[in-house]
Structures are given as structure tokens and as C-alpha cells.
Image (cartoon, rainbow, N blue to C red; front, side, top):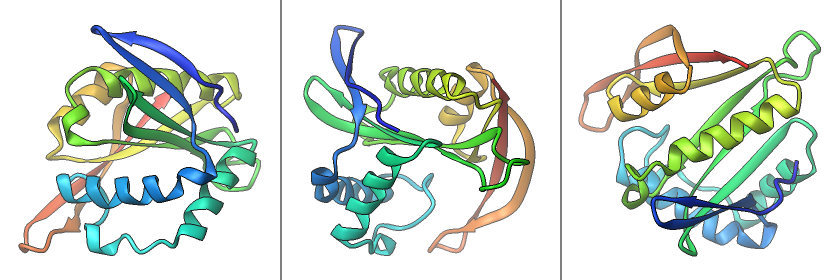
Length: 181
């Protein structure tokens, strides 16, 4: 689905949220490689980001053409800051009432309230689409993200112990969280 460009004011900054464009695929791949290297809280290491430009273009187009998926980019004062998305869970009627959420920002844009703004807009779009439940996962050691998710209404509903193993041999539990819309 397309999210038409909207402007917001956030603590003296201008924020623009809008759908991704296929011609931005190279920027999105560079972003993904960077953010996965900035934090241990994402699902993979930078060297594991091996998507082709064509694959990324198709990913953007499929989200834009979908009736159950949305990808929103965020620009803070004209600079690309990150993105958020939702995707319908499964293709059956039994699972069509809920969607999974993903969000990531460049580290220099965290702590400004941008993630909260993005999630609130995304959840509003989910409600407008008729979704009844949002779900996400977060590593238990990502305290800032957990606090944000809890503060907007997500609750923990499960835990996968040692779900991720880092290159240094340490582990992190993955928390499953849901929010009734």
C-alpha cells in the first residue's frame, strides 16, 4: 500500500514520512548494511545483507502494490533516517486479522522521538486497514525499544531463550510482543 507523503513537526525538526520508491533500492540496501552494523538488536550481521538491487526494487514494489503490507520511509530535516513497515501474517483468513511490525533507524536518529512518531503513524494505518492485532519481536537486552513498545501498548506474550547467538558467543532472548488494535 502507498503511504502518501505527510509532514510532521518533531521537537523543532521537520519529519517527512512517505512510501519508498523502487528507485531508492540502492539507498535502502546501503541503509540496511549500515544499521545492522550499528547495533546488535537487528536480525543479522552486515555481511549477511546480500540482497540484489533487483530484489530490493521488487520488495519495494510489492509493498507498494500490496493490500496488506506497507513500507514507510522517514526523513528528518531532509536526511533519510530509517523506516518502518507492517506485513500481513500469512495468507489465510484465520491469520489475516494481524500483521507484524518492523522498524529500524540509523543510530544518530534514535532518542529523538522519531521511532514513536513512526510507530504511531504505522499503527494508525494498520487500524485503518482493519487489522485487529499488531505483533513484533525485540531482543530482551534492547531496553530502549522495549520501553517504547510497552509505552504505546505492546505487551510481552512469549520468549524464545537464546534466540540469537552473536559472533562473540553470547546470546540474547527474543521477546514476542502484541498489541490489540
